[in-house]
Image (cartoon, rainbow, N blue to C red; front, top):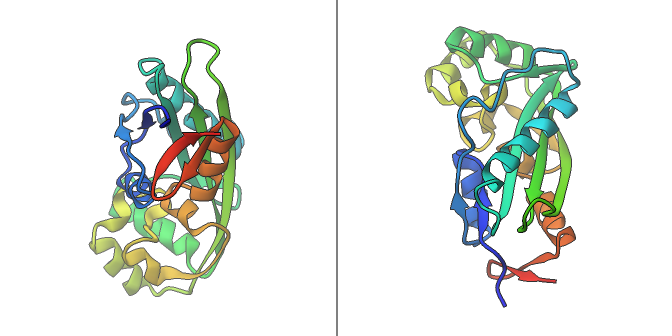
Length: 205
C-alpha cells in the first residue's frame, strides 16, 4: 500500500530540491500570493514563523483534502530581529554587514496537514540552527551581492550557493538553513502515520 499524494505548499526551489533528494513523488502547489507579510516586530519570531507555516499548509490543503500537505517558513534572526528578504542591493549589503563575524539563528517552522476533511490531523514543529559568519570585508560583501544570489533569500544569503563562502560554522541541521529540516519533516510525517521508506516513498505505519 502506498501513501496519499504529497503536496509541497511552497514555491521555494530549495525546498523542492530537498524533497527530490529524498526520492519522494510530490506535487508543488505554492500558497496564494500575499500570504507572507513582513515581520513587523509585534509578535515573537517563532510565533510569526509558525503562523505562516500553518497558513500556507491550510491554504493549500483546503483544495486538497486527499493529500498530505507540507507548509514551511524559514526566518533568520539576529538579536531578536527577523531579517527577511532584502528589498534591494543596499539592503542586502546592510544585512550582511550586520551578520559578518557573528552568530545568528535560522528557524524553520513546519506544518503538515494529513488527508481528511475538517478533522484532518495536523503536525507541526520548529527546527533551529545556529550559523556563524566569518569576518567579511566590505568589498567581499559587495562582490557577493553583485552575484544576485542574496536578493531573494532571507537574511540575504544562500548557504547552498556562493553564500557557503561566508559561513564559518553551523550548529544543528544544515538542511534547515536551506529551508527544510529533513529529519524533522520525516518525524512529523511518522507521527501522522506515514513512514518514510527507501528509496523514496511514504508508507502507512
